[in-house]
Length: 515
Image (cartoon, rainbow, N blue to C red):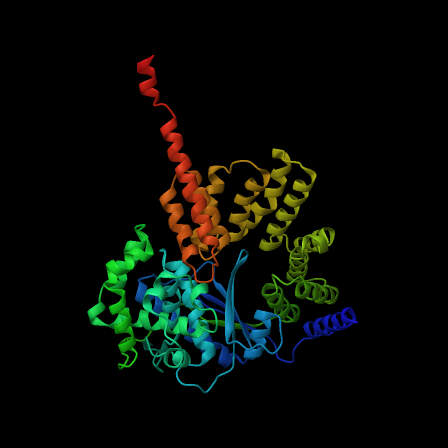
C-alpha cells in the first residue's frame, strides 16, 4: 500500500513539474548575475539593480575591481518562501527565505519574491545578501576565515540597505536574531571562537550562534577600543598560527571580551552610511524566454536542488522526458535530460539513455558547452568500465572537453574536466592540465571540488603552504562537518613524507665526494 501511495505522489509531482505556470519566466543579465523570475519586468529590474548595488558595496569595502564577471552567479526567484523551502528540503510545508549551493557543476542561489512587513529590509533580501556575502568571500577574499566570522560577516552584511539615491547603510541590526540574542542562553565568546559550529549550535541554539557571531563581528568592526584586533587575528591564522591560540593574542582576555560583548548588545548600535551612491556598473537587460526555456527553468531548478535525492531526480527525469518529446528541437532540454539521467544513482542510471540525450543535444548545438563536458564524462566512464587506459582512447575523451573549453575559455567546468580526465586515466596530468586547473580555481574558488583538486595538485608539486591555505578555508567552513580537517591531515602527512624523503636521500655532491 505504501508503494502505491508513493507511486501516486510521484505521478502527481511529475504532472505538477510538467505543467507550465501561467506566468512566464524572464531572464535578467547584469555584470555579475543571471537572474530568472516569474515576476514582472519592473520588479525584476528593481531586484537586479539592488543586487548590483550590493555587489558594488562589497567591492567598495574590499577593494575588488568592478567589471564584467565571466563566471556569473545564477539566481532563481520563486514566488513564495514555501516554494524555496520545498526546493531546499524536498518537503512541502517547509518555508525558508532562500538558499545557496556551490555544487561541483557551479553555484546558484534561490530567493523568493515575497515582501514581508517585518522590521528592516525584507527577509528574502537579507537571506540572499547573507548567501551572496558567502559567495563573495569565497570568490574574492582569498584567506582562511574562522567559522564564527564566516557567519558573522554574512549576517553583518545581510542588512545592507539603500536609499532611493542608492546610498548604502552597512551594519544595521539583524532583527530576526533578537529573540536568540535576548531570550536564549548566551554562547560564551571562548566557546564561540574555539568550538566547531555543529557542536555549538545544536539543541535549538542555531539562532543564538548566528546572533552571537553577528554581534561579535559588529563589535570588532565598530568598537574603537577593538580597532585592529580582527585584522590581527585574521593575519595570525593565515600565517599558520592555531586559531585557538591566536584569539587571546589578538583580543586579549576572552572572558573580558565576553563581558564587553554582553554590554555591547545594550548599547546603541552604530552603522556605516556611505555618502556616495553605489553605481550600477554595466547594462541590465531583461528578456522573456522561449517556450522551451520557460518550461525548462523549473525542471532545471528542481534537478539542481534535488542532487542528493534519487526520488526527486527520478521525477524530474520523467518530466524532462515528456518535455523532450514536446520540444524535440531544443538542445538545452536534451542536455537537462542527459544530466538528470547521469545524476541518478549507479544502479538506477540508464547510461545508454544519457548518451542518447547528450548526443541529441550536441547534434542540435555542436558547441553546447556542458553537453560536451558530459559527453567526455560518459566516454571516460565507458573506458573505465572496459579497463582501457590507452592514450589513444583517452584522447577521444578529451576531444569534446577541449571543444567546450574553446567555446568558452572562461567556463571553469571544462577546464576542470580536462584536468580530471588524467586522474581518471591514472596518469600524471601534464602542465597544460595543471594550468587549466589553476585557471578553473581562479574562476570558481567557491567550488569545493575544484579547490580540493587544486590543493592536492599544489601539494604534489611540493607547494605545501599554498595547499594548506586552500584547504584551511574548507576546514573553517561552518557547514563543512569535519571533512576539511581530514584533508588538512592528508596534506600534512604528504609534507612529512616529502621531508622524510629529503632526509633519507643522500646529497649527490656529498656522495660524489665520498666516492
